[in-house]
Length: 265
Image (tube, rainbow, N blue to C red; front, side, top):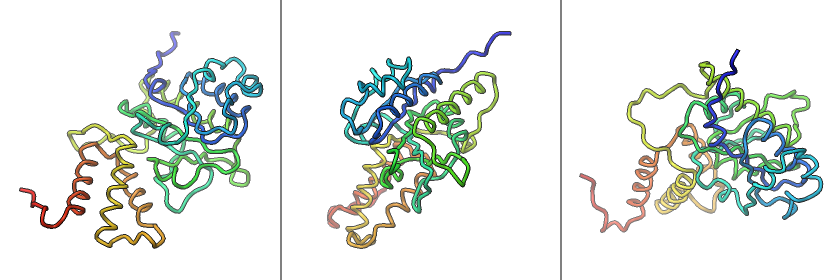
């Protein structure tokens, strides 16, 4: 019996981002997990050791995935790691008061495979502290691995393995004609524009915040719960570039001097 041909587009569109990883061994083990499942792009944000990919522990735990280590990019910020992405998923065992929609690994894998417009990143935090709230709030979804609630903490490389496995299985199922699980059904709204990049969306939020401060709807000295709530609201959608431009246009009109404002025809 012939094996199904894997639709490998998701393997080219997905990157694994490790943020402030402490242990070179975990980096090596994550590289091994990524290669095991057919992926290849690894990005490290401020690892504890600047030369982490060449540490003995990283090489030992990679166990044959040294090519993934050699090709890993080391960057100084999450924003840099997400350049070119229009979809990001944070992986965390800890739920947040203000977070994007919470979904399972299987659900996000289904969406990543079925929506070929996604240039995506899976973001994993530090072994001890996880991901900071500001990173989680930048993401489209928060992935919570449904582990034993009495002991839900996974090793970093184990979490990488779970996500890489689910994405591979979703690709295999798609190649066999099985509809993968997805966090949303196919849209029936008709025309769909190009999805906005994460940098575009973050710029829109900064612009919108500036406008809300200008009209005194948002007080910058007060606890800032409004912006996280707005980010959560928009995370439940998939903003298109034109929609981001509309929102920035509204912010621009708010910020413009009153005498220069002109009504839209």
